[in-house]
Amino acid sequence: MTDRETDLKITDLEMDAYIDGELDPERRFAVETHLSRRPELAARVMGDLSTRSALRILSQDRRPVPAHLLAAARRLIPAQKSRWRRLMPAGLMTGSLAAALTLWVVGVHHPPAYVSYAVASHRIAMMRADMNSQIEAPRFDAREIAANTRIAMPQLPGDWRVTDVQLFPTDKAPALMVAVRTDDGQRMTIFAVRERTGAPERPDAVREGAQSVAYWRRGDMSYALTGDQEPGLMDETAEALART
Image 1 (cartoon, rainbow, N blue to C red):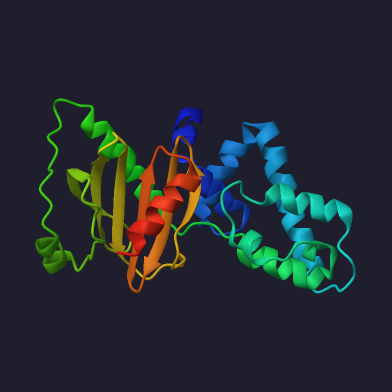
Image 2: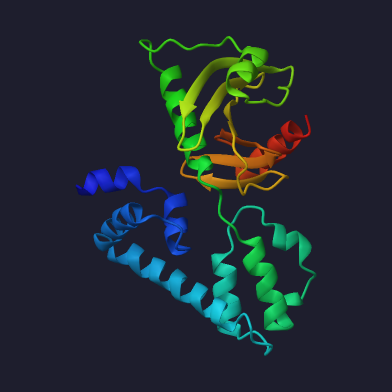
């Protein structure tokens, strides 16, 4: 695998999954090859690995949280909205280590695998939109899609115009990507797959390169909304969409 091939295939989501030990051997090899060529990045990843290991070891301890671990934990907290921030009372991290780390470990989670497909489909849709040789398919028939794929889509706001509709393959099931443009010119895509994933029932948003993606689940359906807005704004838009 060349250096360029590694750069193209390693995503931020995969790097997080590597730190959490959730990749298969082939993808671990790809990530480790990527890191072996970037000593500074490898050092940061090793720092994250050692901090997570320390937190797991100490999670059964009832002593006060050491200051250096508190600082390390805060550095690992994603910049996007985290549920544990909303749930944790002020000053709780100065209490028992077990209680604090339980909330921290539960609250800091990584997006399920289908989110990577959602981001990839969004980028492909934006590429298609800018190419004269690629014909977009703006006709969206929710009933036909549901009858053939069992994919149920949320109701789109009235000021969203569908610009492209495509089916995408995933490891588990076919997925649907619907590209939209809002009245104020925002371009977004909604990705839907019939799969009971680990996505939360209320949307949560992460940053993936130049895009933000908000993901959520409703029963056996998993969704992702991707666009160029900041994670907070994307999360608010997804919250309204999820209510439909």
